[in-house]
Image (cartoon, rainbow, N blue to C red):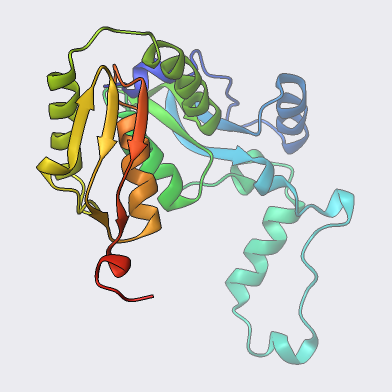
Length: 232
């Protein structure tokens, strides 16, 4: 099982709390990255991403203030905060302060879920409260590329062990309706028999078998359950 330490980028390119917005923009461009953490003596204060810098007065993209009558119903503090974020030259005024983090032992599966759930592109990795790395979507894609090369290395497996692995894997999936007797393996060729409930289920089961070590080919003899019941 891969963990954060296996895939993270380290050492981390970071800025200090007294850095300016211009300096951050230069760092993002020169290093070809989309975000940078703000760190004070190893402690994470926040993170500045491209998203934090696209609404800026310097380039004419600052949010336009509401009309006078809308201002009557607007929150004074929120309007002031928007102005600060689009006009301040101080990185601490534009950075995102609430940052999701992980530790070195966090499984990459949990990191993927965290990125997806929070709709973010990267997450700092901490050790004893200090930033030691960053895991980004690109890191996960890189790990996938490397894993795929090792995953496909040919390995000799006997038919019985292949069949057992497929059957047990199918039984662990909530979408599967394939029974134990519906799977046979001969000389590395997997054959599915019986029925299936939906086309997505059929395809998912084929992928599961395809990704099982030792499988040479797959023959699918199943028919849709609605045909079995005579429903067109």
